Length: 279
Image 1: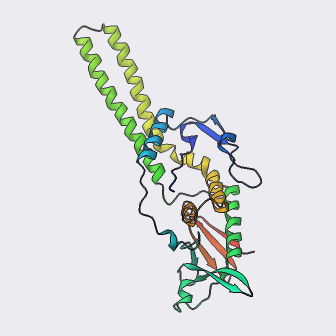
Image 2: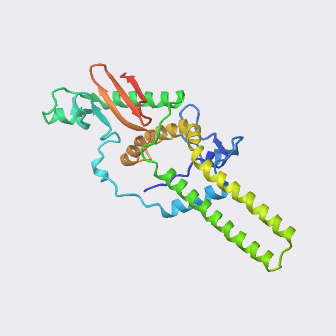
Image 3: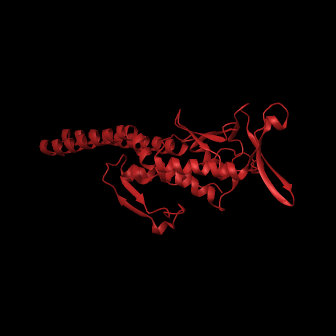
């Protein structure tokens, strides 16, 4: 089932914490979360934020998905061979009555790559989790590959602000007409005009802030997003497809460097590569 998650409340001036268990980093029940108004200035008004999120959830339509059966593992298509650049495919074999899971370069298995890049699933995942936890703890910044949700929210917020600005223009025309027709005194006209001017300035500033503060908001929530991915990967409640999507939100690719006995994790911020030795 496709789930559309709510955007981080930091956008509307709130801080969310007590969401994870400290040791396991698993998500607590929603009623245990603490959400409080923060000291940082909100990027968007609560009304606009909530309206945009509600409309996005109502209108969201996922694109055609890759068939679930093609995801033999949640790392399918993400791990690359350092020799030829092809993906490492997931394999399971039985050895001495026990199942053994490993990844191997697709090109090597088809005899079009000359270097074997076989690595056990256990070692690969252990190194990846070590990289993810280090990224969350040291504050590696990255940009999501797919930002449909944030982009949709931003566009909707811009739309709502523009609608309000247009409404103000119509109000201004009405108060001007009321003054000309004698329904309002000059003093009443001036007061209404001033209120409209202040509201228009506030909306214009809000429109600017929704872009200029976007990067700042990303930095506030980036560690939490990495822990969200870790939690999803460790949970049995998510399918391979959902886990694959979760990894893709923060990682571009993972390159297995056999000679160095390590993996290089490429986070989405350009040039932000993190090497991690295999256990």
